[in-house]
Length: 124
Image 1 (tube, rainbow, N blue to C red):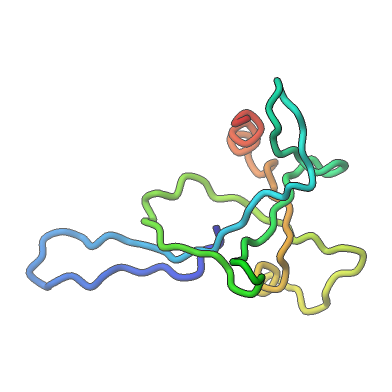
Image 2 (image 1 turned 180 degrees about the vertical axis):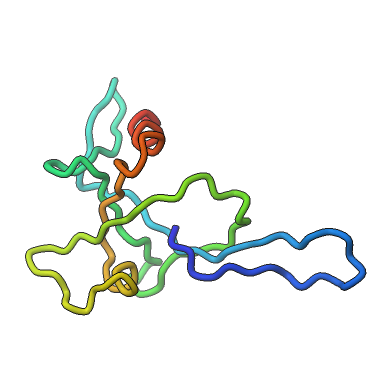
């Protein structure tokens, strides 16, 4: 998910509990472009030559509205780095502030930490 907004509900002043923190995020999905057969199971595979999984931004039917949801911040388990797939020529508008918004295809950097590397490659 790409976090778009972090928020907390307003609680009455006399409440002794801290309000929960939520975020609205937009989903990505694994590309079906790279698959492998492991022990008779069809699984997603890393892209050749880069050994990173390929992700696409998830859109609703029609392809213009991004799929998102509201999640409790405490439900986040891992933070991942996404690397835009630039293609043969990089869009000159891309920078650190726009790369997640102007691109719809990404590599998931599973080499960012050994924990991420092992978690992703051993889930299958």
